[in-house]
Image 1 (cartoon, rainbow, N blue to C red):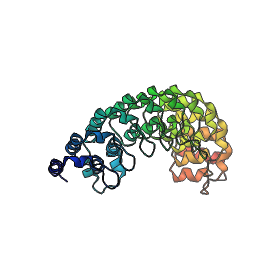
Image 2 (tube, rainbow, N blue to C red; image 1 turned 90 degrees about the vertical axis):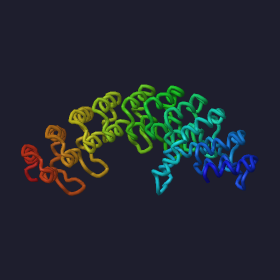
Image 3 (cartoon, helix red, strand yellow; image 1 turned 45 degrees about the horizontal axis):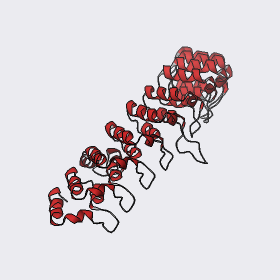
Image 4 (cartoon, rainbow, N blue to C red; image 1 turned 30 degrees about the vertical axis):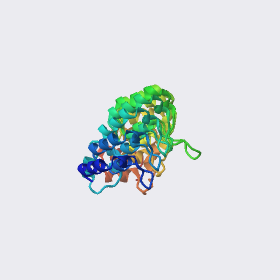
Length: 350
């Protein structure tokens, strides 16, 4: 309904703002669920301010409902007219601030799914100012997990919030750097460092997490990958990758070189990993490929191919999972004459 229509109905019967509907919702709850305008919401608050402290039939405060109207929630909702839906909720941040000003303790209240307003704000891509307001009103929210085992820091990293927001959450609860998300009987979950690397957060954020919990470098995520693997996968800088390797040389033994070649790591990175664990040249990945196969498939430099041959000359005789010898792969990828000659020299019968 239009703002004018809502105001006319309120003028005709002001107590309507105090009456619950059949599902236990007040007019304010219904307005927020329907993404009503800021003016309509303000009219309902003016008519019955106490509504701001009332939960609907599902156990949600007006603040929870407003946070579900943020852009992140709208984008996940599957609206056909996504641009129109986003325009309709452009006022939500201001509305959230108004609701918080009127009822600051709402920042401490969980919704039926065990999520605090801070969780909802991070999930739904609230502005930095909104997140900071919620944190300032309830600092201990930084150490609260939602029903999935997510701390606010986990959600912040998954959603790739600003460095400043991540830092604020970490400052509020430094031990968050040591806590895994989604902990349970069947999996260990991921540390904030894993999440930062997976979501390609800034290296400054990743380094802050390393500084907060250096042992994170040696821990695997729920999929069994170390931070070194994730850094290679996300194409982190050579400097950062090598710093992870230097802090945990054993990581070179966990197919890190295979990851490096699959994700086109620099020549220096590949060489450093090979120096840390030369035996990797004789190991196959889950697809049955040696490092030499991967190097040729990914058009790696001649120097890298020579280093891999030097580490395992017999690799020139080995067929990959696709049945091709290294020489076949080199020819298919139009490798240099020198590279082809090196492979022929290593295995003339190819």
